[in-house]
Image (cartoon, rainbow, N blue to C red):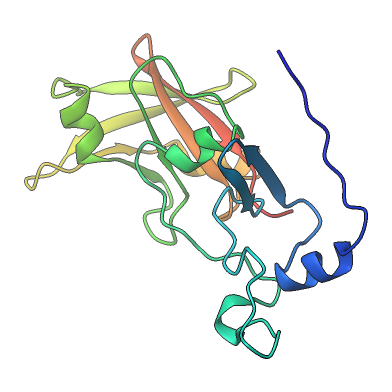
Length: 185
């Protein structure tokens, strides 16, 4: 395995200002360029120093310290590409806590179909990173939505899960194992 170390000799202040770099931002160096991610794992808006004919950065390219909000795909591609977590081997989905239905965990329809989980029913456990078990009931709505009802609010409370955090939910031995990627701290 080959490692490379990069550092700035000159121009660091300009780069930081032009790209709204904040403590905790992540730089991903690849053979085809550099990617700047916020703590949430989302691309930071305004990355890249570009100038107009007067040598000034265009206003729309510069942000003021706030990473953009990006929707979470059910499979968390950005999180796994940025190496904030390892992609599970079993069926899984990625989610964030919502503002409503705080005690219910929605299982995306894509996950049900892609992993052929049509037989989910009855009861199961949500298991947190400390192996604590939270019982839930599987609820199916007429429109095909599937929810884990009960237990989700307690799991989030004891693990101090916030709306910025991303939850990786992996189906393991009839239970749903939950891991967290923490958002901006």
